[in-house]
Image (cartoon, rainbow, N blue to C red):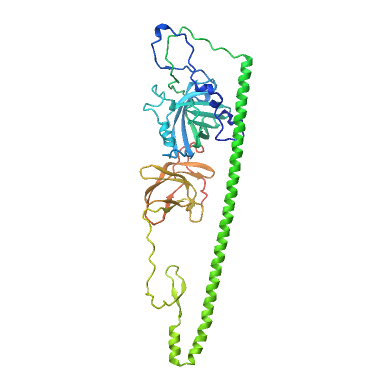
Length: 470
């Protein structure tokens, strides 16, 4: 994560600091001389911490995690989770601050992140799942969740302003990523349970002093770290190039599919035009044949001419109730039952139907674009990052859902070019009926809507910028 400022290609596969030091996977207890009288004694100790350079992280922070790309292995229960991180005055390693968090990561990744049933930040909170390590380098911050393992934990990196930070996070060694916002709650350091030492405590006669590295050893370690950084950089560049090639290939396939679709539409239009021309020629042919038949029938007698004229199909002008305009129709053929229509096919009551949502600002009298999520009535998360539209009618893309009861949730909107958050989120119940498309309109007044403090609205002010509507 400290490579955030060095790598010009920020990539989700960039390795965190701990990957460059496999030795950090092993706890380092103090060397002791075992007294024979205490060989049977076993207890759980805490590793001592040391002062480190990342003092700017000390204190309590509020963190918001947003899920942009969920894990393919576990269906998420929420698209956003909030919580706190507390950093102490001590460091786990020479460069990182140690702390703990109280986030419910189970909502993103399932039971593998189940929190212990103890009070957060209490002396009993010693679980590896709640451990956090963080460091600050200039204007960059890096934070690792579950830093003692290199697979499954979360790594975050981003821009640091002293009292706030924001950036990206990803799950190490597997899928799942998103973005985060960090806000300081207090600068007072938090007292948290230190790192558990799984080795038994024995009577120590004296601690062996740590041996200082020689210049040759320091140079070798520096070369090893530089090689690891160079490899991580080259790997990230290779992955970025591979993803760019994959995106270019997908774009080419999309263009080819669009061309094929355009050809199919043109062919269908040509067929429809030809069918219309054939129909017009057939009508014209019948129109010229009718006078000839009437003239021939007149030579055979008036009665026979009248019968021939009565048997010919006569065009009739009728009013179309659907469109309100006149339409040309012919008399029913012999044997047809007047008023008979074809019964529509019965639909499946459980089939999905389209749902469209738009939101109207009563202050500007305009529809505007924002995002919303769709829940079940019990709050179970289903769809996130859906949006309203920017067309003339304000409706966004349709979402097909089975019939039933749902709930629309709107938490934010764009105030000019800033992201504003409603103080009280909008919740709109929706009942989808079988076979009936649902178009939902939500009314609000952005100028009077209370807002909560956020990164771009620190004082929680109301939006005074006119909304850019449709």
